[in-house]
Image 1 (cartoon, rainbow over the protein chains, first blue to last red):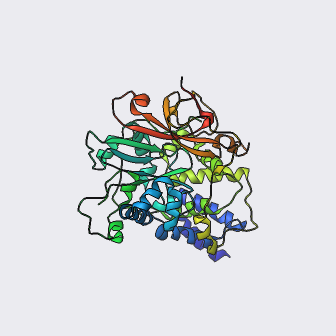
Image 2: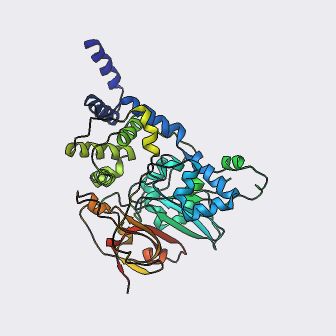
Length: 202
Length: 200
């Protein structure tokens, strides 16, 4: 209808070239019956509100409070994490790496931006950007310093480059003076970056 | 392919801009693009998708954002593939699709060629097609830290030659071996058997 066409033109004139390209792609795919736009809405909502770093925080808090679970996480992280309720795309093969006073772990994907979606959601922009991807493997300590972390000289940095379909989750050290806290309270102090390895928990 | 995407060890990109909080999607088009990529089943593999994203001109790759890489990837793949229109993902099936347990592990008749603790060298190689052996480890000696089973081999899968599963090793390198510095740090990469040879 001409009227509709006019409205679309008006709407489109406010979109950036890249937004127009994506809109054109979506329109084409919808028109041909390859995709249901309502499914796209659900998928967006899923990663905006349901699959994110609160999932990983629950895994970490459980590892801090349940030694048997921590042990399982070390041996078979995929199964242990699935037992908490998290599995799926970009978390098919999970490995948990535990920080200790001697070893600090840090995760990167230098080749694309692989990230453990079921436990951390979709990655933040900095994780996907050239400064992080280029520097994490050659100079991890300067990266950590930018995040405000200065490690003891005796702490070794262990970097994990996610070059295959294995996805890494850092289990940060439990902060001091948290003995009385419940698993739920502990989960609340686990921040996203501590599970990538660029900050401390707490 | 020695593309711009192979960023490990490159220099000059400056500091990391990491705000304390940020939205999952910064623009509506990013959300739509992400959702399209995750919903349209086009008959291509994850390896072809990565390869398509990496096929951007290096200067353009570095100037554009993650989801623009995805757009480029999907536009390229749609020139080659026609998606299946018989059963597009329904809204009520999205959750099951994103949380379904998948696996890249395959059974193979041969045993792993390398053992945990064994010293290996990453072959010096420069394939013109998609590979997951980053440039910064090629030619270097590391130690097998973990054996992860046999996984779908991207270098074959991307060429339409099938999954050709190969043993996948987590290899530990010292910072000194890779970069010539004295840091005590260790760098791990997950590398398939065809990338590796014994270090004698």
